[in-house]
Length: 456
Image 1 (cartoon, rainbow, N blue to C red):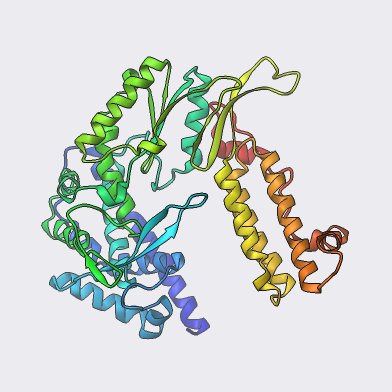
Image 2: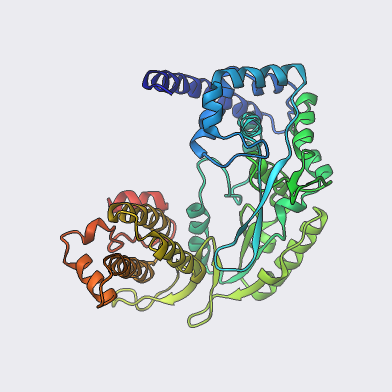
């Protein structure tokens, strides 16, 4: 693609982005103004040219592998983006669009021997799903409750983590932790469509969602279709999951059962007493059973937050009640958090992979660049916590692995000590990112974004 065409497409994307945002604002305001309204004219928005242009930019930015047709993003650009989008719009308008089955792969879960099923739709199907998501998201966002945080615009994992800090400070020290067993794979299609139909009565949109759900996945050379599941990896799957689990959020009574915090299928309830926690777990089990789901037994437990007691893991952090370690805070106990063992082990595994023996022919600059990309991304998430010790350990491990890699590359007899010395003696540690003094400890009742701005 030439520089001129890239510039032209970037300009077009900016213009289309403004129009799409305006469309979403209109849909959101209409849904918010009338909670009982069912939208009957949405399908014409799905195949609008500006919406499809915007979705292509989103799909391209997220990259991703090819589906079962083996068509990559580069192949689409060579074929012609405008040509493909025009064909998709025509197929949607004329009712000829049929999605391909997704390509099913299994990826390891960090820190465990389990593998997570991941469905990879074809590029053209990812574009259609993204267009459907753009149209439906503002309608459902008008209904979603504050206890839901996962895969929502302008909400993040750190917003959910802040709720735990605030509720602990209020005295809620009994915690129910669980996650929903095979949530994305277990959502029944009939129940999901009923949840969608609460807000959407456009038959063309409903038919398109049913078609996407029934497309199935290719696994081991055979096509698998079912009556349940919104495949994990699909662009629209997180929105459909939230729309379905909104029924759980809506039925929850915080005053009776404690404060619910849900990040997609990960659930934590902050309670005042053990009795309330036990009642909350029982109620959670009943509500999930009514949705055709169940909590994962291995990850379900009640934890009492007390000084010296074990804590719990949530969203990559380990949470534990500790006493202040400075003279001014020694009389206080508070909920601290730092990277969990699984998160720290994942960091070490990735660092070891980047500095592996099979990469001795790679230039030093490339190794350092890859290390920095990972370290800055990993620490960018975990810096919002009481994470100085763990971040320091991970940073030291990266330095040691880089030194060991240098020793192997130079075939030095003195081993890793020589390599580490070379890294330490260089003015900037060969450009390796430092993870010291970047931590921002959380504070109760203070937005984490504001704390970050204050530190800057």
